[in-house]
Image (cartoon, rainbow, N blue to C red):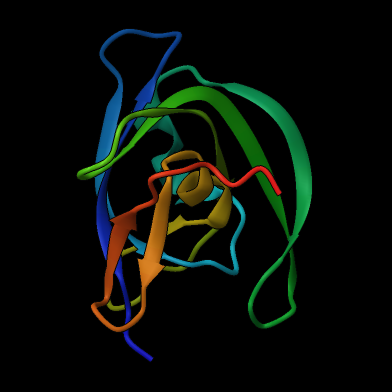
Amino acid sequence: MGRISVNVRIRNLLEEGYTLTCDALVDTGAAYMVLPRAWKDRLGKIATVRNIECETATQALVPGEVCGPVEIILEGFAPIYGEVLFLDMEPAEGSYEPLVGYIVLEQAQASVDMLGHRLLHVKKADLK
């Protein structure tokens, strides 16, 4: 199975001048926009909305910190507004791998094209 990455810009909506840009792996098994906790300061003073327990792909349980509000822009898509999830991550080969989850994809009206290994615009929001 191929990997799909997208450039993402995240902006703190409550504190001017704090923006983070990165490439992130599209992961339809994840729910949130997931960032390494080590990057949290890059978004300035950002409010913790809630702390949650998260299950990873290896079924390990790890604590997560949901923070916001933020503006999230997937390259080529309109901005959306919501939250990010910060987790303790180990860098793979020297770099972190942020994740774009299904909540962000749905809000941005993006769908995964598995054959073309890209994101496509969805013309209609699914209310079913």
